[in-house]
Length: 563
Image (cartoon, rainbow, N blue to C red; front, side, top):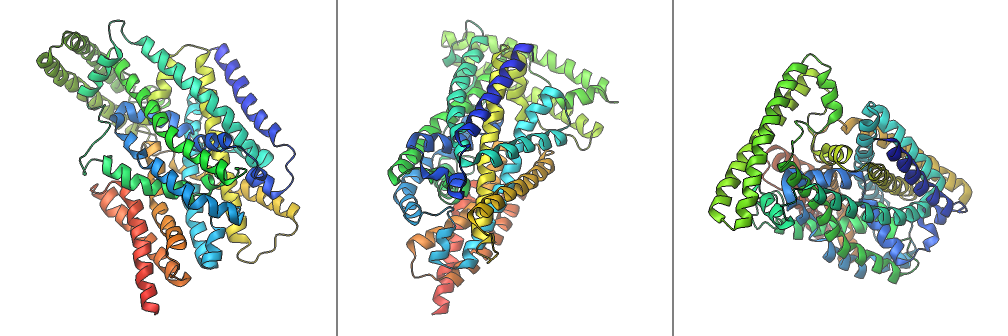
């Protein structure tokens, strides 16, 4: 990066954070710290819900997902609008009427302490693990910029988020989210404009997308039930995941509880439901545009430049340079085929386009093989290194291909997005810990001022724990946007099952629900391990409806047995 990038990065980054802290500098009570005194309008609620999800995971991993696997991941969000409708009708009015701080307070009035605490602990586990990933994502950017060790970078960024969250509270987070979404929308539009401007002059966007389609990148909807992402898993599994995430995950419930009325919260949720899909479609499409760009340009042998630098300084440097030379030659051949394919598409020569499409896929397979060989060298030279680069594709492209000045702004926005998402999660973890665990177990918390201090102390404690999680997962090479949803799917079905019984099955008592939830949680993890992780025959989205069915079914049977 150049001086102009650093100046704009620092100005954008500090401006967004200081604005959020300034907007909430006077909150002195728990309601203000955790729920912004329930005073925010619908557009703040909507933008806050969207920005809580739009961390660096979204802006690094989603384009990487589009680049590597195409548009299929969009199907993950198909159940979202229906989930928002159900939440608006059922969850929102109940939570507002009860004036709860957390979603799990409701469970005590409906069941007992055991159900409330167990469900809250499941949330703490799922959100704690996922938030560790949210710290790791911007750490990738900072470590790439400064060539720092990822462990120290995770600690630094975690410390910055902790400071922001403990000083500012929820209203600071919400105001910051509003600013972030404005910046992010403009930055993404500009990024797509710059990428398209870098494509060959004689290549239309339509033909570029057709070429991506020849490589299997444009399968937006799949009816194949065995596909990793398909219409059915998106509509059904995605519906249950989104319903649980937005209706029972405190990091999201805490966002719509800041609404000043039921109507404001509902409108914010509906805004999120119908804007999120086109937003995610566009972000993943940016990854496809990057793929199209690399059809006509030399593709990096490996996108993780930090690992590449280490490799060039190792005993395997010459092996890497040999692979880089092969990759350069392959890129030239790939470009020649891409140019011919563009001409065939322009001329409407379908048969020739199909033939060239097969040739193009051959060179893409060669490229993938070279990348695998580089990954093998990384494992040999540094067994603890990151041998996957899907999460580095977009960052590498931004750093090397986009205009200076814009690079600084885009990176600042991505880092700020992560800080906002992490801050929301920290606030939710602290709120749930004190409200649903400490208080419920009968531990004294003192006056309201002492309670606020304890909440901030818990925020710091959770901050330290998620930094440790970030350090632990930094060796993972999985797509972060997928991994964070896999983690959620371990727990969300069971949590949602408990809430569904609370809302709709009034005759089922606390003991059957508690034991059903415990057994179901164990079974979901076992099912995931054997059928998703080990044998890859069950897409992870199906864990969500399975969790719901197990909890409701077993609770019903246990209730019948009690009679």
